[in-house]
Image (cartoon, rainbow, N blue to C red):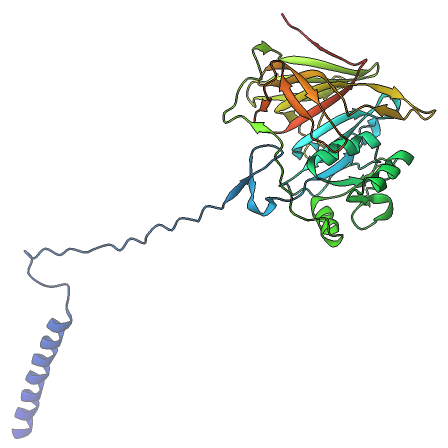
Length: 349
């Protein structure tokens, strides 16, 4: 009997202990009238720091600060039929189009703040292209040169990269025939420029940019044609959506080789220069140091302008007819250097 009583007492004590523990651990029970509140923790929004930008002196648009004070790259790009479509002209800040031999033009494309994997086809230098490359304190890129071109590059002490002597910076694309297949890239050009000590700082004050997008004048020019030669015509048609001009060569859209997209241009400057043939090959002499008249075209309108260049390395000055300095819209600019026999045709109705 003693032992049985002992077990009963122990069982009662164990039950009392279990009930007591369950009450201490049961947090879901309590006064039903008690109001519980909880505070949801909200993580603070982390804003990414704004990356500082610099103004691109070629276009007036924003570019990475890493390119500030960097010298532009001025690349000679071919425009013979077998060289089209070209690579990278659509990304150039400024492009000059000037006649070469045989009634075909050639381009001088200036780059700053861009990262292009393919530019070309790169072709040879001509003396008058040097005069415009020097206006921007640029590094001049070419693949060969005319005899006078080589003389001038040396005498003017230009920082130049010549593909004839550089198989690292340039390559040949076997899908095209020589000489229409020499290409380069921004990365390779900058590497070559750095290794040769060309990448010094420069201060460029090139254009007066409009603070807002404005018509170029009070006369309309929605579509126009530039006749360089009897078998070569450039034309532009305004795109109301893009607010830029779409470019054509001999009636066909001028496109980029890699993207297949048409080339669009924000600003177009047309100027006429004295041009003459100087040898049996058909090489030209173009009088860049001079003054004359032209047009500034943007946003479906144009103004008649005047231009003056006082020295080969001096910046061309553009003014309106009243003598005030020309201001342009932000964006890319194509400068059409026309021979004196060339013409600009448009419907002025």
